[in-house]
Image 1 (tube, rainbow, N blue to C red):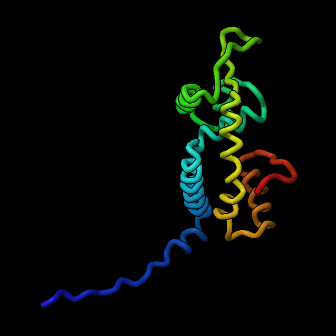
Image 2 (cartoon, rainbow, N blue to C red):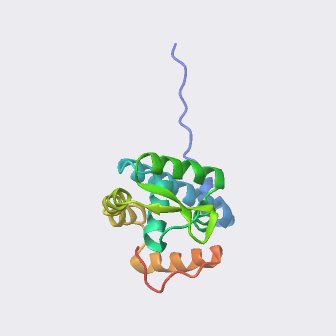
Image 3 (tube, rainbow, N blue to C red):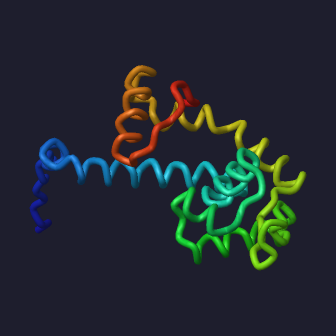
Length: 160
């Protein structure tokens, strides 16, 4: 005689939990976006952390690992590994800081600029795919709201 199979009812607790606990909803959404971003960055062979380091160096110029760590909100020990990886690959170089000979400045190389340019080509499509459930106005609103939570003030119009 075969054992009786019972079908389990589909659970619908998470929507209730997400409505009651904004913190849980935001954590789960953040984790889902982080997984998608890492998968996308891995396709480019760059990884999210290395992508962010190159992006900041191109945007603001040479800076210390400490500054990169603080601005990108990446743990210092992780930042050392990211810079080591980028330096080994020839995408950045560490140079003595002319203003403080005890410190080093991380500088993007031409190779790093090319790699970032290639990786950046897929970002708009990735953002559209990841945030497809939101209208452009909702994406703008989310940007403003997250800026408030993070106590940052994004530019009036930025990439979506």
